[in-house]
Length: 87
Length: 255
Image 1 (tube, each protein chain N blue to C red):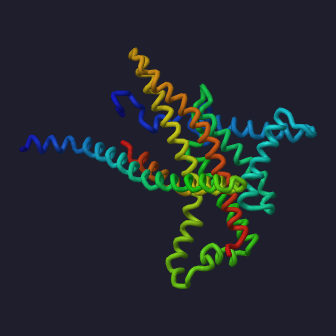
Image 2 (spheres, chains in turn blue, yellow):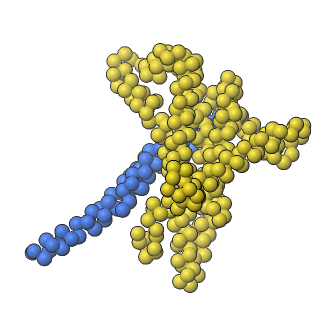
Image 3 (cartoon, rainbow over the protein chains, first blue to last red):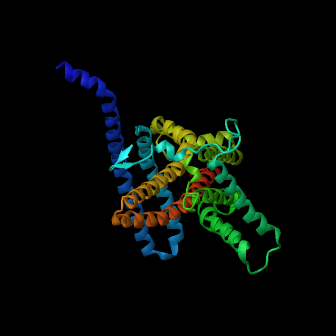
Protein backbone atom coordinates (compact mmCIF):
# COMPACT_ATOMS: atom_id res chain seq x y z
CA UNK A 1 0.00 0.00 0.00
CA UNK A 2 2.78 2.40 1.07
CA UNK A 3 4.67 1.35 -2.00
CA UNK A 4 1.81 2.37 -4.25
CA UNK A 5 1.48 5.69 -2.38
CA UNK A 6 5.16 6.57 -2.83
CA UNK A 7 4.94 5.48 -6.42
CA UNK A 8 1.96 7.76 -6.88
CA UNK A 9 3.82 10.64 -5.25
CA UNK A 10 6.85 10.29 -7.51
CA UNK A 11 4.71 9.86 -10.56
CA UNK A 12 2.42 12.78 -9.75
CA UNK A 13 4.55 15.09 -11.89
CA UNK A 14 4.51 12.76 -14.86
CA UNK A 15 0.81 12.16 -14.33
CA UNK A 16 0.22 15.91 -14.50
CA UNK A 17 2.21 16.13 -17.72
CA UNK A 18 0.21 13.31 -19.23
CA UNK A 19 -3.10 14.83 -18.17
CA UNK A 20 -1.99 18.15 -19.65
CA UNK A 21 -1.20 16.46 -22.94
CA UNK A 22 -4.58 14.70 -22.96
CA UNK A 23 -6.31 17.97 -22.12
CA UNK A 24 -4.46 19.82 -24.86
CA UNK A 25 -5.35 17.23 -27.47
CA UNK A 26 -8.98 17.00 -26.41
CA UNK A 27 -9.27 20.77 -26.16
CA UNK A 28 -8.01 21.38 -29.64
CA UNK A 29 -10.15 18.58 -31.04
CA UNK A 30 -13.27 20.01 -29.43
CA UNK A 31 -12.40 23.55 -30.50
CA UNK A 32 -12.07 22.41 -34.12
CA UNK A 33 -15.56 20.89 -34.37
CA UNK A 34 -17.59 24.09 -34.46
CA UNK A 35 -15.37 26.09 -36.80
CA UNK A 36 -15.12 23.06 -39.09
CA UNK A 37 -18.88 22.93 -39.49
CA UNK A 38 -19.02 26.73 -39.67
CA UNK A 39 -16.41 27.11 -42.40
CA UNK A 40 -18.10 24.34 -44.35
CA UNK A 41 -21.39 26.22 -44.19
CA UNK A 42 -19.79 29.54 -45.17
CA UNK A 43 -17.90 28.15 -48.15
CA UNK A 44 -20.76 25.93 -49.28
CA UNK A 45 -23.21 28.81 -49.34
CA UNK A 46 -20.67 31.07 -51.02
CA UNK A 47 -20.14 28.49 -53.77
CA UNK A 48 -23.83 28.02 -54.36
CA UNK A 49 -24.39 31.77 -54.60
CA UNK A 50 -21.39 32.14 -56.93
CA UNK A 51 -22.82 29.39 -59.13
CA UNK A 52 -26.20 31.11 -59.16
CA UNK A 53 -24.85 34.59 -59.87
CA UNK A 54 -21.36 34.39 -61.37
CA UNK A 55 -21.29 38.18 -61.92
CA UNK A 56 -21.28 38.79 -58.14
CA UNK A 57 -18.46 36.30 -57.55
CA UNK A 58 -15.95 38.99 -56.53
CA UNK A 59 -18.12 40.39 -53.77
CA UNK A 60 -19.11 36.93 -52.57
CA UNK A 61 -15.49 35.82 -52.45
CA UNK A 62 -14.46 38.80 -50.32
CA UNK A 63 -17.33 38.25 -47.92
CA UNK A 64 -16.55 34.53 -47.84
CA UNK A 65 -12.97 35.22 -46.72
CA UNK A 66 -14.29 37.53 -44.03
CA UNK A 67 -16.67 34.85 -42.80
CA UNK A 68 -13.90 32.26 -42.83
CA UNK A 69 -11.60 34.61 -40.89
CA UNK A 70 -14.13 35.25 -38.15
CA UNK A 71 -15.14 31.59 -37.87
CA UNK A 72 -11.58 30.36 -37.93
CA UNK A 73 -10.64 32.58 -34.98
CA UNK A 74 -12.39 30.16 -32.61
CA UNK A 75 -10.35 27.22 -33.86
CA UNK A 76 -7.19 29.29 -33.57
CA UNK A 77 -7.93 30.16 -29.95
CA UNK A 78 -8.23 26.42 -29.35
CA UNK A 79 -4.87 25.99 -31.07
CA UNK A 80 -3.31 28.65 -28.84
CA UNK A 81 -4.58 26.83 -25.75
CA UNK A 82 -3.13 23.63 -27.21
CA UNK A 83 0.29 25.26 -27.61
CA UNK A 84 0.14 26.73 -24.10
CA UNK A 85 -0.79 23.40 -22.50
CA UNK A 86 1.90 21.37 -24.22
CA UNK A 87 4.43 20.02 -21.73
CA UNK B 1 9.02 15.05 -26.59
CA UNK B 2 8.49 11.71 -28.20
CA UNK B 3 6.02 11.38 -31.04
CA UNK B 4 5.57 7.93 -32.59
CA UNK B 5 9.10 6.98 -31.43
CA UNK B 6 10.62 10.03 -33.16
CA UNK B 7 12.81 12.54 -31.43
CA UNK B 8 10.62 15.61 -31.80
CA UNK B 9 12.13 18.85 -30.48
CA UNK B 10 10.10 20.79 -27.90
CA UNK B 11 7.81 23.30 -29.56
CA UNK B 12 9.66 26.30 -28.16
CA UNK B 13 12.93 25.13 -29.75
CA UNK B 14 11.40 25.38 -33.19
CA UNK B 15 10.72 29.07 -32.81
CA UNK B 16 13.65 30.31 -30.70
CA UNK B 17 16.69 31.36 -32.65
CA UNK B 18 20.03 32.24 -31.07
CA UNK B 19 21.21 35.84 -31.37
CA UNK B 20 23.63 36.47 -34.18
CA UNK B 21 24.62 40.11 -33.60
CA UNK B 22 24.61 42.40 -30.56
CA UNK B 23 23.81 39.43 -28.33
CA UNK B 24 22.27 40.31 -24.98
CA UNK B 25 21.47 43.91 -25.78
CA UNK B 26 18.06 45.36 -26.62
CA UNK B 27 18.95 45.36 -30.32
CA UNK B 28 19.94 41.70 -30.57
CA UNK B 29 19.55 40.38 -34.10
CA UNK B 30 18.48 36.82 -34.80
CA UNK B 31 17.04 34.98 -37.78
CA UNK B 32 13.55 36.41 -37.26
CA UNK B 33 14.84 39.99 -37.32
CA UNK B 34 16.87 39.27 -40.45
CA UNK B 35 13.78 37.86 -42.18
CA UNK B 36 11.81 40.97 -41.26
CA UNK B 37 14.59 43.20 -42.55
CA UNK B 38 14.62 41.21 -45.79
CA UNK B 39 10.84 41.61 -46.07
CA UNK B 40 11.12 45.37 -45.55
CA UNK B 41 13.93 45.60 -48.12
CA UNK B 42 12.09 43.54 -50.74
CA UNK B 43 8.86 45.50 -50.29
CA UNK B 44 10.54 48.89 -50.51
CA UNK B 45 12.79 47.77 -53.38
CA UNK B 46 9.81 46.68 -55.47
CA UNK B 47 7.81 49.86 -54.98
CA UNK B 48 10.67 52.34 -54.97
CA UNK B 49 12.23 50.98 -58.14
CA UNK B 50 8.83 50.73 -59.81
CA UNK B 51 8.00 54.28 -58.81
CA UNK B 52 11.33 55.80 -59.82
CA UNK B 53 11.37 54.91 -63.49
CA UNK B 54 8.72 56.86 -65.34
CA UNK B 55 6.30 54.11 -66.13
CA UNK B 56 5.98 52.80 -69.62
CA UNK B 57 2.44 52.29 -70.88
CA UNK B 58 2.93 48.56 -71.10
CA UNK B 59 4.33 47.54 -67.70
CA UNK B 60 7.22 45.11 -67.71
CA UNK B 61 9.33 43.55 -64.98
CA UNK B 62 9.15 45.04 -61.51
CA UNK B 63 6.69 47.71 -62.62
CA UNK B 64 4.31 44.94 -63.64
CA UNK B 65 4.59 43.31 -60.20
CA UNK B 66 3.99 46.60 -58.39
CA UNK B 67 1.08 47.62 -60.60
CA UNK B 68 -0.73 44.32 -60.36
CA UNK B 69 -0.17 44.31 -56.59
CA UNK B 70 -1.62 47.79 -56.16
CA UNK B 71 -4.42 46.91 -58.53
CA UNK B 72 -5.24 43.73 -56.63
CA UNK B 73 -5.43 45.52 -53.27
CA UNK B 74 -7.47 48.34 -54.79
CA UNK B 75 -10.00 46.12 -56.58
CA UNK B 76 -10.49 43.27 -54.16
CA UNK B 77 -9.80 44.94 -50.80
CA UNK B 78 -10.51 48.66 -50.86
CA UNK B 79 -13.37 48.80 -53.36
CA UNK B 80 -15.11 45.74 -51.92
CA UNK B 81 -15.04 46.90 -48.30
CA UNK B 82 -14.61 50.68 -47.90
CA UNK B 83 -15.59 52.04 -51.31
CA UNK B 84 -14.13 54.91 -53.33
CA UNK B 85 -13.39 57.09 -50.29
CA UNK B 86 -11.05 54.41 -48.99
CA UNK B 87 -8.55 55.12 -51.78
CA UNK B 88 -6.38 57.20 -49.46
CA UNK B 89 -5.69 54.10 -47.34
CA UNK B 90 -4.48 52.21 -50.42
CA UNK B 91 -0.73 52.89 -49.80
CA UNK B 92 -0.98 51.71 -46.19
CA UNK B 93 -2.95 48.58 -47.07
CA UNK B 94 -0.72 47.69 -50.03
CA UNK B 95 2.46 48.09 -48.01
CA UNK B 96 1.06 46.02 -45.19
CA UNK B 97 -0.11 43.29 -47.58
CA UNK B 98 3.30 42.95 -49.19
CA UNK B 99 5.23 43.16 -45.93
CA UNK B 100 3.15 40.40 -44.33
CA UNK B 101 3.27 38.35 -47.53
CA UNK B 102 7.06 38.50 -47.79
CA UNK B 103 7.65 37.78 -44.12
CA UNK B 104 5.28 34.80 -44.38
CA UNK B 105 6.61 33.40 -47.62
CA UNK B 106 10.04 32.75 -46.07
CA UNK B 107 8.30 29.74 -44.57
CA UNK B 108 8.79 27.88 -47.85
CA UNK B 109 12.01 29.46 -49.12
CA UNK B 110 14.59 26.63 -49.07
CA UNK B 111 17.41 27.21 -46.61
CA UNK B 112 15.48 29.74 -44.56
CA UNK B 113 12.14 28.04 -43.98
CA UNK B 114 10.92 30.03 -41.05
CA UNK B 115 7.76 32.15 -41.10
CA UNK B 116 8.82 35.31 -39.28
CA UNK B 117 5.22 35.99 -38.27
CA UNK B 118 5.20 32.89 -36.09
CA UNK B 119 6.75 35.13 -33.45
CA UNK B 120 4.07 37.24 -31.81
CA UNK B 121 5.91 40.60 -31.64
CA UNK B 122 5.33 41.97 -35.12
CA UNK B 123 1.75 40.68 -35.61
CA UNK B 124 0.65 42.29 -32.34
CA UNK B 125 2.43 45.55 -33.25
CA UNK B 126 0.75 45.62 -36.65
CA UNK B 127 -2.60 44.89 -34.99
CA UNK B 128 -2.09 47.74 -32.51
CA UNK B 129 -1.21 50.09 -35.39
CA UNK B 130 -4.45 49.03 -37.07
CA UNK B 131 -6.32 49.58 -33.79
CA UNK B 132 -4.99 53.14 -33.50
CA UNK B 133 -5.80 53.88 -37.14
CA UNK B 134 -9.39 52.67 -37.15
CA UNK B 135 -10.18 54.42 -33.88
CA UNK B 136 -8.58 57.61 -35.20
CA UNK B 137 -10.57 57.38 -38.44
CA UNK B 138 -13.77 56.78 -36.49
CA UNK B 139 -13.23 59.77 -34.23
CA UNK B 140 -12.25 62.01 -37.14
CA UNK B 141 -15.15 61.12 -39.41
CA UNK B 142 -17.95 60.85 -36.83
CA UNK B 143 -16.69 62.89 -33.88
CA UNK B 144 -15.83 61.20 -30.60
CA UNK B 145 -19.43 61.15 -29.36
CA UNK B 146 -20.85 59.88 -32.61
CA UNK B 147 -18.17 57.21 -32.95
CA UNK B 148 -18.70 55.89 -29.43
CA UNK B 149 -22.47 56.04 -29.84
CA UNK B 150 -22.41 54.18 -33.14
CA UNK B 151 -19.99 51.53 -32.02
CA UNK B 152 -21.35 50.98 -28.52
CA UNK B 153 -25.07 51.52 -29.16
CA UNK B 154 -25.73 50.05 -32.60
CA UNK B 155 -29.02 51.45 -33.91
CA UNK B 156 -31.99 49.18 -34.48
CA UNK B 157 -31.62 47.28 -31.22
CA UNK B 158 -34.46 47.31 -28.64
CA UNK B 159 -33.64 49.64 -25.72
CA UNK B 160 -33.54 46.92 -23.04
CA UNK B 161 -31.08 44.83 -25.03
CA UNK B 162 -28.42 47.56 -24.73
CA UNK B 163 -27.75 46.14 -21.26
CA UNK B 164 -26.27 43.09 -22.99
CA UNK B 165 -25.20 44.52 -26.32
CA UNK B 166 -23.13 47.45 -25.08
CA UNK B 167 -20.67 45.49 -22.91
CA UNK B 168 -20.25 42.91 -25.68
CA UNK B 169 -19.61 45.61 -28.27
CA UNK B 170 -17.22 47.40 -25.92
CA UNK B 171 -15.12 44.29 -25.41
CA UNK B 172 -15.29 43.06 -28.99
CA UNK B 173 -14.57 46.39 -30.68
CA UNK B 174 -11.91 47.86 -28.43
CA UNK B 175 -10.25 44.87 -26.77
CA UNK B 176 -10.68 41.64 -28.70
CA UNK B 177 -10.24 42.98 -32.25
CA UNK B 178 -6.49 43.67 -32.23
CA UNK B 179 -5.80 40.40 -30.42
CA UNK B 180 -7.89 38.29 -32.76
CA UNK B 181 -6.22 40.01 -35.71
CA UNK B 182 -2.75 39.25 -34.35
CA UNK B 183 -3.57 35.71 -33.16
CA UNK B 184 -5.09 34.80 -36.54
CA UNK B 185 -1.86 35.60 -38.38
CA UNK B 186 0.45 34.21 -35.70
CA UNK B 187 -1.39 30.94 -35.06
CA UNK B 188 -1.74 30.15 -38.76
CA UNK B 189 1.99 30.58 -39.23
CA UNK B 190 2.84 28.52 -36.12
CA UNK B 191 0.52 25.75 -37.26
CA UNK B 192 1.99 25.74 -40.76
CA UNK B 193 5.54 25.62 -39.48
CA UNK B 194 4.74 22.77 -37.07
CA UNK B 195 3.08 20.84 -39.89
CA UNK B 196 6.11 21.17 -42.17
CA UNK B 197 8.52 20.35 -39.35
CA UNK B 198 6.56 17.23 -38.42
CA UNK B 199 6.65 15.81 -41.93
CA UNK B 200 10.30 16.79 -42.42
CA UNK B 201 11.36 15.00 -39.21
CA UNK B 202 9.26 11.97 -40.11
CA UNK B 203 10.88 11.82 -43.55
CA UNK B 204 14.38 12.17 -42.20
CA UNK B 205 13.97 9.54 -39.49
CA UNK B 206 12.49 6.99 -41.88
CA UNK B 207 15.21 7.74 -44.44
CA UNK B 208 18.01 7.43 -41.87
CA UNK B 209 16.68 4.05 -40.79
CA UNK B 210 16.54 2.91 -44.38
CA UNK B 211 12.83 2.62 -44.88
CA UNK B 212 11.44 3.10 -48.38
CA UNK B 213 8.33 4.39 -46.62
CA UNK B 214 10.08 7.77 -46.32
CA UNK B 215 8.60 8.53 -49.74
CA UNK B 216 5.10 8.89 -48.25
CA UNK B 217 5.81 11.69 -45.72
CA UNK B 218 8.10 13.30 -48.28
CA UNK B 219 5.26 13.50 -50.79
CA UNK B 220 3.08 14.94 -48.03
CA UNK B 221 5.82 17.47 -47.25
CA UNK B 222 5.85 18.66 -50.87
CA UNK B 223 2.06 18.87 -50.88
CA UNK B 224 1.99 20.79 -47.60
CA UNK B 225 4.65 23.20 -48.88
CA UNK B 226 2.32 24.09 -51.72
CA UNK B 227 -0.53 24.44 -49.25
CA UNK B 228 1.56 26.72 -47.04
CA UNK B 229 2.26 29.05 -49.98
CA UNK B 230 -1.50 29.38 -50.32
CA UNK B 231 -1.87 29.97 -46.57
CA UNK B 232 0.84 32.66 -46.57
CA UNK B 233 -0.86 34.63 -49.33
CA UNK B 234 -4.30 34.07 -47.81
CA UNK B 235 -3.27 35.26 -44.35
CA UNK B 236 -1.69 38.42 -45.75
CA UNK B 237 -4.90 38.99 -47.72
CA UNK B 238 -7.14 38.35 -44.70
CA UNK B 239 -5.12 40.66 -42.45
CA UNK B 240 -5.37 43.41 -45.06
CA UNK B 241 -9.05 42.90 -45.75
CA UNK B 242 -9.95 42.86 -42.05
CA UNK B 243 -8.01 46.11 -41.60
CA UNK B 244 -10.00 47.58 -44.47
CA UNK B 245 -13.27 46.31 -42.97
CA UNK B 246 -12.45 47.87 -39.58
CA UNK B 247 -11.48 51.19 -41.18
CA UNK B 248 -14.61 51.14 -43.33
CA UNK B 249 -16.78 50.23 -40.37
CA UNK B 250 -15.59 53.17 -38.30
CA UNK B 251 -15.76 55.52 -41.29
CA UNK B 252 -19.43 54.99 -42.07
CA UNK B 253 -21.97 55.00 -39.27
CA UNK B 254 -24.10 51.88 -39.24
CA UNK B 255 -27.70 52.46 -40.14
